[in-house]
Amino acid sequence: MPLTPGCPRCPTPVAQVGREVSCPEHGVLAPVWRTESATYDGFVDHLELAGDMPTLLPWPLGTAWNVGDFAVVPDAATLTAVRGPSDGGEVDVTLVIERPGTGLGARVAGTPDPADDLAYAPAHARVRIASQAISLWALDTGGTELDRTVLVGEHGGRWLWLILRPASALLLMGREWHLRDVSALGMSLVELPFGGPAGAW
Image (tube, rainbow, N blue to C red; front, side, top):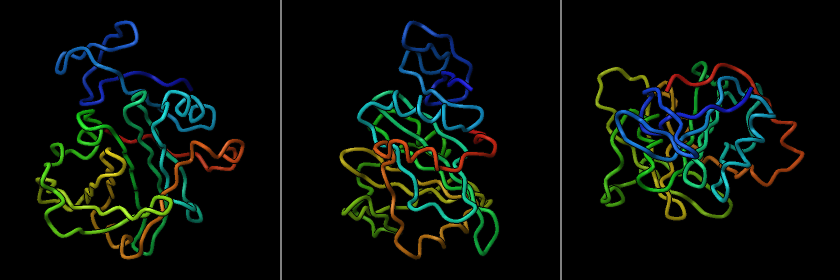
């Protein structure tokens, strides 16, 4: 299924203007390209559009975990979402890495962009990308329902977002997670399990 364009900041329908899109809310800007159904072929298209942006997945994927969603703003942001079982039930984990100001992470998380003074507070969790440990801070989701936990940090001058559903999935972060840039996996990508509905963001 081909990737379709949209606004990275909101779900409002857009009109294509050359290589950009026109959003009634946010004007003319680079589109986010996303899929309605995660497949290997669509993921290859995603990686081609990503340019030098990494595409991150928890690694290795756990047993019975699937890649259910992905999206890309060319050379500016990537998103992946995985779903799988845990001791507390089914868990959704969405990863976004983006250049500051892109807006995709905030849209998916349902929060404002992170503040510049974020790192002055104690970190709530950490992940590892290659040999680097990345500190993450929890953002206020502004609601009373514990439907999600939003964590954000910085990696290579880019914002790194983790959106965990339900909020109790934060307990999975008790151990240090490893994330891998899968853009260099080549033919090994064929072995990735794809499936499930795309996210409702």
